[in-house]
Amino acid sequence: MAEPLFLKPVFHEKIWGGRKLSESFGYDLPDGDIGECWAISGHKNGTSIVENGTFSGQKLDQLWTNHPELFGNPKGSVFPLLTKILDAEDSLSVQVHPDNDYAMKHEGELGKTECWYVIDAEPDSYLIYGHNAKTKEELDQMIDSGDWDHLLTKVPVKSGDFFYVPSGTVHALNKGILVLETQQSSDTTYRLYDYDRVDKTTGKMRELHLEQSKDTITVPYKRPQLDIETVEKNGNKYTTFVQPPLSPYFAVYKWEINNSDDFKHEVGSYTLISVLSGEGQITIDNKDYSLSKGQHLIVPATVNSWKLSGNLNIIASESGEK
Image 1: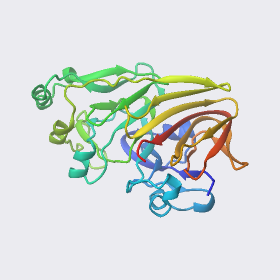
Image 2: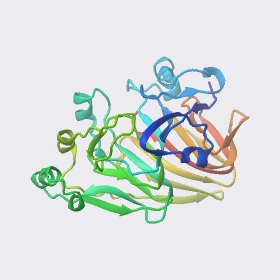
Image 3: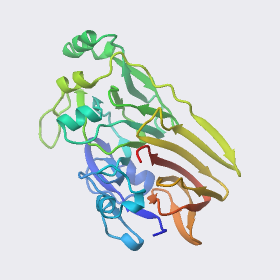
């Protein structure tokens, strides 16, 4: 089967969400404050459905189980990645994610290493990214006393920035930021601080997970040193943000396509593609498929080579697990 898998997004309402996913990408959103577009997902809490071709109407998790050849006959039992677009109309909780061992033991699923490509950021926007505690004892004391001003590290952010967020990293998107997130397929989040907000649906403050956070936060924090590289080829720009071994679970790229170019898979590889802007096409076996802003697709391992053409800004990713 040599054809792309175009996927239908799943949307999630969040206390911090808004309506920008409709304004920016033209998505037909359900009512409410929509914070997350699960664009490419095999997770049980929001599974993508194929919209075209041979497997139209089938769920991504079903394809992973029933047609492993599409993904290079992988060893893992679940589709390993999750691509989201997040609209932080308000600030997200300050949080941390566990690694695989802790998450599997306590939550029964993968851990959560993730990364963000900043699509848009309002002036003076910032992230919570890391912390200042030097020891586990100091971390626990600052959490117990609520000394957030001294504990948390704020980092200014602008459109086009990229952040790698390994499990164990204290982090939060703050208000006015729109990102594409590539992550392990996990929905486990431990909230450390939530600004004492009250959920308008329940009338209560959301649950915090202080003990789990203390268990999983990396101390001391050391900011990842990325080796971001951009090359030009045939009038196009290709940026590598992260890849193994620094990022063991995924490689993430930005492709700025202005002229047609050819692509090839290594044996067993498949590629996740999200179109952030522009229009163009992907050509597989001499058949053209239109691409436009807001579309998400997988080029399966059964496709050895393909061509992209048009004017496209794309975030692409590959699994680090074979």
